Length: 378
Image (tube, rainbow, N blue to C red; front, side):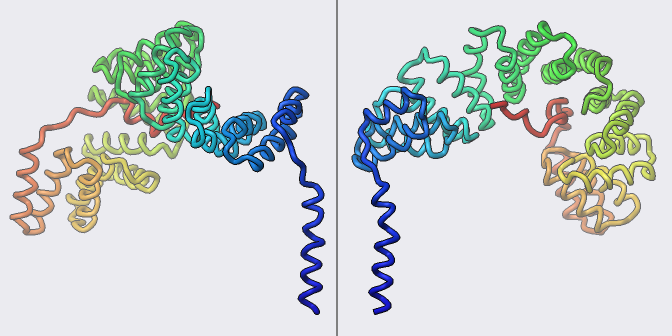
């Protein structure tokens, strides 16, 4: 008897759902759209797709109305279903790419946007979105490939030229980056960021003295701009102008006391001045703040080696090698460490490795300044 009552209760609970169910035709959804009732239009299209799950156009229209409500995840699902039913629907690939882009799913946006551009190579919206998606996915050479022609056709779009300039910089296409930053500076000569980025591009081209001038200009405009003092100091450090470099690193630490790069290179300068007592606390603080600055580990290893703290020297020098196996200094110090520990055979292997390696050039300032390119503003 109790089970029968429960059965009746279930039927009663289901009745309102059946009572409120409504049948819609495409004409009803279109009418809602014409009246600006987009949420109701989306529900109507959803009902049409339930009545006919093979109606590709209905799924595509549902996606459009969901996108207008910024429900991009649901819109992408509707577009994907429409493509599965009819991949030749006009505009469907572009719409899917845009929905993925709006969600920040840049890698997922690339394939449909590429398909849309293949259908219509003159579609500048598809080309722009594809270039921006490559940028968002950190594929900078392809970002340059697609954004460059768009930027040329729109010389006044400062935001687009900035993204292209960043793409060129991160693709290590420094000539392209420099051209773009010069265009930005023509419109805004007092932009410290543009001067700094121009300096990064110049340094990438091996024109470090000119890069120093750009950073000096940026510092005059905005002396407390994050990283402006560090970038200038690093360029001086590369030029072995250690007195000037130390001044700039200390200036950066006045702005940002926990800047690990400034601490590391300030510690290295103290090492070069044969003052390990001043270097040690700077280097220790560096690795506490950031565990991937190679020079800090190499210098720490040298200090521990000289003070016969062999276990600490082993850990820090091995970490330096792990971060960049092609740098010979850490291998040389490891060789000396193994010698001091009486392991002659392993020491000779490290010294042989040093002979195989050539001293690498110092990295350009762009590699030191930023951990990642600026995110897209959507």
